[in-house]
Image (cartoon, rainbow over all chains, first blue to last red; front, side):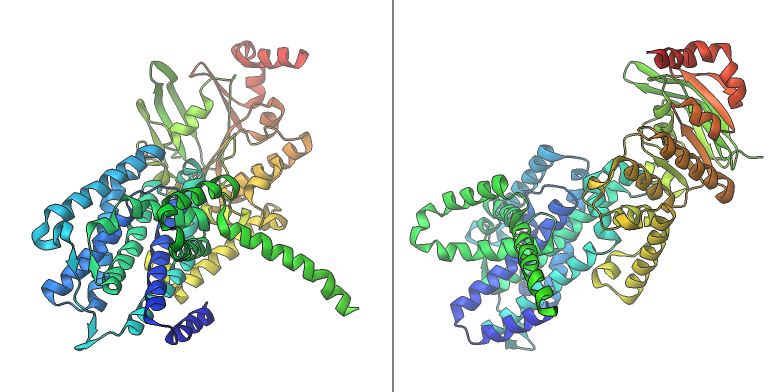
Length: 312
Length: 260
């Protein structure tokens, strides 16, 4: 992974402003998708309010900077912590609900956040949105490339921590709670606590993504964090592969590039999006990551006889 | 001697149905207690009530003299009550090793932040837990399945994994729900031997639901018989086998089954 980060970091130095901007947005999507996948793919809880936690991170960090003068490197972690805290508050009742009921409850929370942003116009700018102060360190503004490197760093860190978590007791318990809450409980796992922690954890990832989006785009408004954003994030993890960090990365990266590819047929992009989602649900329910693994295995098998031949 | 497990006047209600009625039960440390009775007698419900999986309507449960009824299931597990399932509930997509690692859980505690950052301390705990889990797999002859998804296991192996997973948490009391059901006679014999070793060499107290009378005779020190949610007899296996009430309620039924 380290090599990929360095390559991307160096390679982007030669790119123009627009591709760098697009790459930044794609990586922000990756961070959000990684967080959502821990919640939905691993702990088995559907969430239709992941974009609200992004909003909390975005507005939280932007207002901390604008009102209290806290620089971005302090305000983004604080915004993420706030998102995690609210995530835990949402998770407390939500973790008692399953399936469609949980989907509805989280959708309700999304609406509350939307209305709160619109009604608290004095602080949030309401529907007209909020212009974000330029990120700076010690009075020096971050260049577009510096902002890109910041997002790249956060993205790499997010992927790394998620992989670590999944390889630890935390990841096993997330999966155990999804696969059999009854057995998990009998083995000493507090199902309620794990579900709640999953909400807080995924909200923290979303919070970081939101804070970065505010800085990169320079402007936020409630529409950015509405229900279509929440659904797009679900599409990321379904297309990429549920319960897999690699899947989150693949899904978010591929689908972030899609709007650019579809630019000539822009009017139909919603339909195409939906068709892709349906296609994956029906034909590739384990996502791109499963396809990737299958291809990798097949290539390995094809290499094997050749290797044996070379030896003899 | 303080009994390891004491169930006092336990009742469990499912809506209008009294599934368990005024059941009392004492199991001493190191004892192997059998729990038998016809289908629907309430045996599994007793186990579910002891482990906190179903709510208790009346009565209480004591573990080593301390009242533990109404504690949540995961707390009871951490206090040392382990269980196996009649219909095993594996974490199907997880490997056998990971299934056992979930069972080790409380002995391998790592904080969230440490786990996320994979600190040396977190990696050490993970390595130790894995080593312990591999030891458990070895004891249960499961090493060759360590990376197999639990959903892909043959039935007998799955049963063994269920037991290994429950024992990984080092319980002092193990509740076994039909440990030999679906097993061949030789598999069942091996399971009996394993269970006896648990009680005799590790001092684990066993409460075993078993349908097969042959298994019960070979395994249990004493037997409690249930029918229609209530205890109808209690005693040594040989005595129980001759008990008139028990024969009418249960063994008779089995004898009739055997004829068919």
